[in-house]
Image (cartoon, rainbow over all chains, first blue to last red; front, side, top):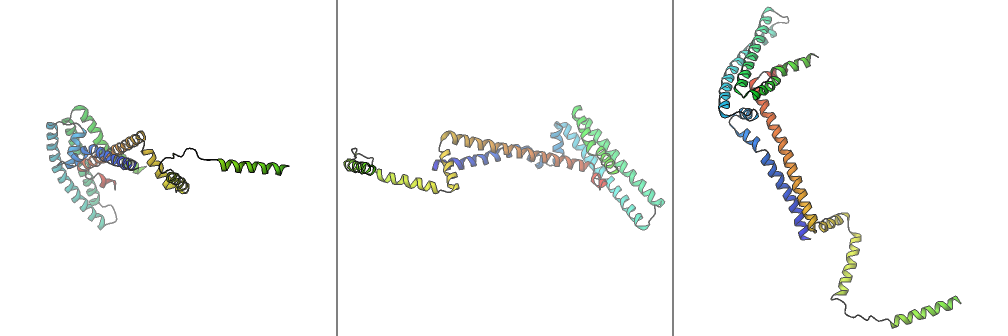
Length: 155
Length: 115
């Protein structure tokens, strides 16, 4: 009788230990990614099988891109603020509004152009096969993803 | 006629019962106690609840080594499978989160333009 109860609870204990053992072993990779200094770049390195020199080069490009990106974002925000004030002051499309809209669109286009250029530079730093895969993925999530969503909204 | 036959058979039965004796007097030790316990157990089983029956059934099954081993193996496999599936979900979630954060860093206005 006692032995049967020991087997019963021992079995449950074995199941719990097996669950946590496999779970912690299986998520060790994810935890190490999240604990790294820059998890997004650490993910990029693992996902696209980058060696250390390739990764170091991409990190440099990434830093340079982000610095330029922050500046472009600031300009877009300023233009957005200007457009907001213009829109609040009238109820027709004035030449000033038209100009601000064009400039805002130009800034966004410039931003996207720089972003695409960065993607091409990063993809060229990767091994060719991985570079192609990276380009297809990142374009699908950014430029092509946006055009898709816009088409979806227009339907 | 019939009642006369019945009277005869009763007399014979009574005579046979009087003459009947238990020849084997070497009963096992605590025979009577064991008999009463058995009777009590059977009566208790008849009145046992479903839960008790389930518990008895489990404990009786697990007392057998082959079934106990199968039970522990089954739970081990179930634990491993559940851990593996949960880890896979967690891993997929982390990958999705980090890749989305990377895209967000690259294209901060992406979500803003969709709003």
